[in-house]
Length: 449
Figure 1: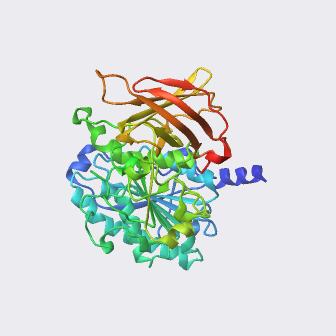
Figure 2 (figure 1 turned 90 degrees about the horizontal axis):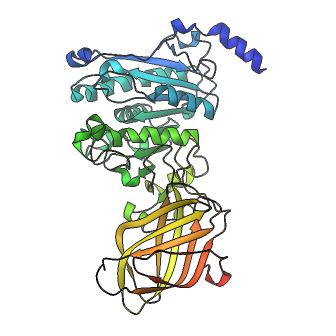
């Protein structure tokens, strides 16, 4: 059967010399401006290496386009240099790996490639009208609107929103990757993406303090690292172009990693990123009995719960380098010390010669007598089994006598790997600014609450 499908694909697909490619423009064309032209490039499992431009009016003549399959449309954003997005081939292949579908790359580079951002913004309405008319023709020929998924990047997110609004919110899903902020922030819902534009709208924010949109736009909004500055991105203008685009582009790369399943980005509903880092939102109580949301393609387990709740903000953290994974532990400790102490905490996990470290330093913690403290420890790697734990309380005391902390209980709960054992230790004495190591022990039932 697979051999038969392969032979059919060879017969109906074009030679590589006849493949239709994403429009590649040069700086001169961007400088003088381009006239809008919307090109739909079709990819399926039978032609992943050879895009086929789909006729807006005669798409039924293309045998690779199957209206009975789901259709995912990928819509790029502003292209100031005119070069094709570097991620197009990657997202096509990863989408095809999810399920058998039509993948349409919406190439509106002629219209998005312009040094004048205002012109590109103006063109989004025309692009949306073009796509809407095409989808309407799909429906007229038997396609279901609920099987259409729009993935919009930056300006493309708002294009997707305009399409959804035109089709009365009957589109199945819109995924928005760091929706554009300039000229959209503060505008009413009819002038940007909003939750009524599709049956389900999920949004990922990575640059909301610059090129991205500041605020919630979907049924669920994922805020990576708080939604603004991303780890590993340049912090000064001397880094050149990367300083301006790194945070904004990170949304695409995180989504690609999620599609590739190299990382499971579990997100937690919370009122703020600081509350999330404080460990106050690590059980997804509002969604029970469904699991916590996970960034990516599969949303069936928690989608209905999120839609029922209304607009939901969720937070997660990443590392600085691909595949951007973090391994999270909830840390619960009870301290006994006669006087209040302030400081940050560093925890290390050991397995053989391998050591990973988490610094809880986003704020200074207060430790009081018989007081329970909860924190979130985030490690850049996963380590199992954990053979030893090291902990250090870092205070501002550098010249005075060394104070001691009596730790009545320490418990580390793995969040993403619930099948792994909890790590506990009881009644140990620590000295400030001095690292102490010990082996974890099984957690006593009386201490689990």
